Image (cartoon, rainbow, N blue to C red):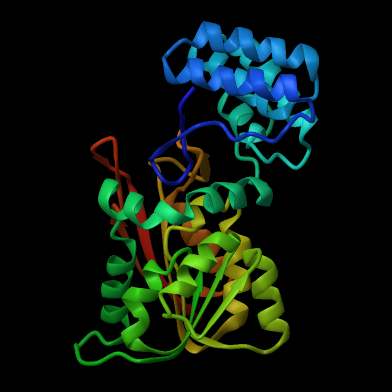
Length: 321
């Protein structure tokens, strides 16, 4: 089975968390070899054999669910993903998201930290190449252009004393904004992504942690930022309103919050086939207003392409009311 990796648009194989049984692990690896050759039936048979030996083998259940879903067997796919979730309550593989796409459970469940961290840790070494060369990613430059236009409508040099890069990843937004910032701070859930960002020597401070927890700690420490940027990170956040409230607490007077989201034509939040969230325009406006942030700009953009098509998105610039 080949899975579309959430957020990257590049292909990756299923991850292995050992069952603790050598025979089951070997059959799992053999199943991946069969999948690489396009033999789903043979792979499914090997996975079923592995599960006979190790019934709580979460990786095998998740891979089997993917095969059954690809074969159009919805009921047995659901059963496999449910078994994967029971075997791995922290949802390292993302079974809850796959079940949501199959119409079971919450339509837009919050993503588990362990699942998101694994995805980004796994892809950190090739993240820049995937985004920039395969997906034509341009979110940071679009944000820089918009922030510059809002901060200095008449043109001229724009300078920020302190900027916070939420979900900084490998530092793509940091690289775009660094010339306009005196002190640059980055936060990301993935330690591997932070390691990649550190190698670029762009940031004055880098932290590994969960976004809301970090923002709460910064607010408690009375930290203030003239600019907070969230470039393509909110596609992994179901509750945009909670982030907006947390950002508002660390914005300095007159500070700006620049962000991008994926969007859809309806209202509310939608879990897309890519397993990223899309936020409707009305939902974005309500989230900002509820946090005491005034939108200076909310524009249609496409920060990336997937399968040759632009991904519909929104770019927002907000300031404290």
